[in-house]
Length: 401
Image 1 (cartoon, rainbow, N blue to C red):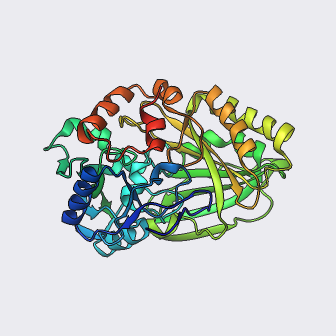
Image 2 (cartoon, rainbow, N blue to C red):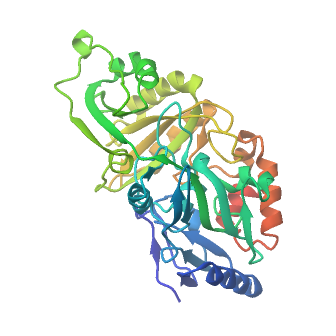
């Protein structure tokens, strides 16, 4: 009997029948074949940073922590083992003179887990991390190794780049990379109305831009990042809405040390991806709803970011420029009533939930949001015909309704 698994925020706990840490691909294949023969489900787990129950199983929980590291990295491609944490990946690429195109707000996750759930950063010109994958190697539900890339089964790549761990255990990925570079990161505070008035300018004149809104004070913390060899824009201040003082931060460093933010406080989070044209009306309703219903419990902050459109079947930025709204709540505070109310607002404006964060949608509600939904399900059934990776939680997301 394995011990109890608890995720990063503490909101998800379960006890699998077995916990496994295979050291290589052959051990992964053997484990999947054994599970298939014995009727056990298998779920891969990375850092446990997700707060959705994608990893929950009463069968075998599989960590690839022992199957990690950069395999090759030169030119514009890098091949990486699935268990590699993003922080270690950044250092490994840096040592090889390389860098990823973009990163998310945290770097605890494994590369397989981050791309399987659509982890993203911010910037009008940047897709989620899954868009950086040019190849995926996985062990399917029959225990076979399958390479998916432009030369091998290219028709499966739009499914494999973001798969929720439903197609197999991702043991290796190939990434688009570029020569390493440095970013300047600046942040300052402003009134939310000033931020919204200048939002389009800030987004279009900076490589990366996001902001936190603090509902109780109506202040924001704005963050912009630009390559040190490129200029970035900061709009002129205007009177009463001028930021209250000098920049809070102005520093330079390589990508992997500059984009992610250090986290000590643990939190729960719901994040929805909205068509960008719906953002102004949706954010206005979020502000009204928090003011009228949740001001006492909305004890923390709301994060706004952007994602470029892509063609990945289960990507929540599929086919449209996307603006995201994330509500964060300290783990010591209640969140469900607040988050469910925000979810109702997000759904009203065509939002799609982040796969790795809190939401309450099932296949019935999700299917209309994704034009290639049925294509993904057909690939899942082809690669995992016996449902080795299909737990009840995953079935509720993909197969019911």
